[in-house]
Amino acid sequence: MTTKPKVNKYSAKRTPQGSGTAEARSKAMAKIRKATQDQAKGDPSSDIEKIKNEGLTGRQLRVARRLAQKHGLDAKSDFEAVKLLREMGIDPFQRANLLDLAANDQTGPSSTAQENTKIQLPQTFDEKSKSVPGLELSPAQRREYEIGQIQKDVARRRRRKLVALLMRLAVFVFIPTFVVGYYFYRVATPMYASSSAFSILQADGGTGAVGGFLSGTQYATAQDSVASQEFLESKDALERLNRDIGFSDVFKQDWIDPIQRLSPDSTLEEEHKLYKKVVTIGYDPSDGIVRMEVATPDPEYSVEVSRRLIHYAEETINNLSELKREDQMREALKSFEIAQEARQRAQEDLIELQLQGAILDPQSVIASLRARSDQVEIQLQDKELELAALLDNTRPNQAKVDGVSRDIARLEAVLAELNAEMLDMSAGENSLARLSVRIQMAQADLAARDMMLQSAMQQVETTRTEANRKVRYLTVSVNPVASQEPTYPRKFENTILAFLLFAGIYLMISLTASVLREQVSS
Image (cartoon, rainbow, N blue to C red; front, side, top):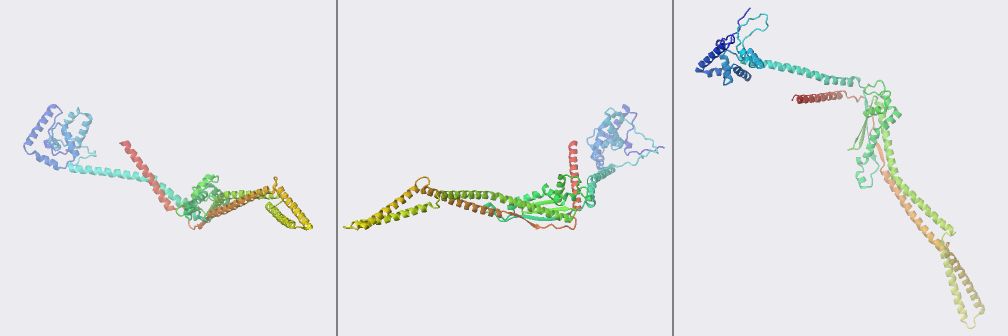
């Protein structure tokens, strides 16, 4: 069955074409020129105004200009090209003409002439064909139709991209977050934390300018606080806990979740890694307080671990204080011992000198000899005066003169003996004078050693006082208390944190991929 094809409104002006010969082409062109000239005599601007009012797009006008150039029409504007094509009976916006134009661009100018002379005759219509010709759309309707198609295509692409985005988010963000949340809510073993706080104080401030300025502040014991913190976080503290209360064995039980459970043959490094996770120690330099938190599966065990660690820290501080005290007292005690030994040697030398002469005080002996010699000399002078007085008489008593003379002779003998004794003690190496000088020197040395010993003793006392002032001691401000509810894991906070982490990783990967794709495409 054949149907009559739809006739274009410009078909009345269409020029019949022959079999593609040059003669038919020239006749058609002549008719078109004649019709154009006849119409030019009228009002051509009215037709162009009508074309402008049709609301043609820029793309349609460009297509019309290209078709006019293809058919050899000299159009001064795009609207005039549309007008000239319609006068030739060619619809510049028909799909077949657009396809011919695209085919002409691919096949070249050799096939353009043959396509121009193609005869457009009514065709038979097959009822089985699904493409039924419809009404001819106006340019405005066609534009709306094309815009609708573009919008549908954009919406379809958006839906595809949205589905792909949701799939990627589900794979890289939602599913991992669900797995993490399931672990925290269903699998993770609850941990009970016990918190405590202690500080390290100094007995008294130092006497120096810097020590007096820092005394009573947290900076005076900052080094000791940091040292105690380092010890509590060390493997030494972990080994002491394992020896005392079996810390690692608690986390090797079967009911601990696989992530927090230690293997039966775990190494010290693995145990220390877990120890640093469950035991959190922090030092705040602003107030000088060391805060400690211990989290274990048993609340009572957490309290026991906290008390053990505080005891270990106290022992460490006492050892540090004892070492400092010993360092300060060592030199003072050494000086005191040296002074004491020197005084002892000086005293022994003095005693030895006194024993050598068998006289404890040579000066007293010499003084007594001089005193006796002086008395004998006085008596001798008295007897000589008495003798002179007796001899002054004309007839002296011979008995008295003889008695006085014999007294004078005896006194002179005694004085000679005393002088001889003094000369004997003063002569030679063991003379009393030399021995006296040596004893005086020994006594002076002993007195100097006594002063040095007294000064060393005073230095020892001063150093001991300073050492006692610098003694550190640990005071507990917050005692550990057993928790009644699990402290860890923080299920909701950890799940939200995992979601933000996965989302951030996905966002960074997406941005990186977009930047790389843009760089490659450019």
